[in-house]
Length: 73
Image (cartoon, rainbow, N blue to C red; front, side, top):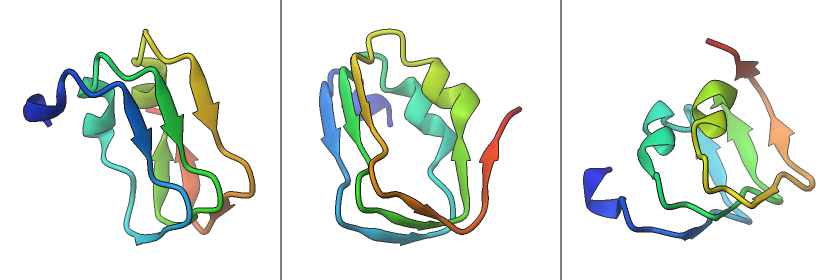
């Protein structure tokens, strides 16, 4: 994910994922907005790595379906 270090907006809305959101999401140090609305996620959501996003201003989790758990490491 180092190639995406300057990425500011990531919109993954309206997707169905199998597996987990990568803990490397915390490496997106410039991320200001992350949208996971209307996402069906079968796996874990790494909350500690999301908390590492110091520039994050907007986190959209509207209507998220989680078949797994929030991962608190």
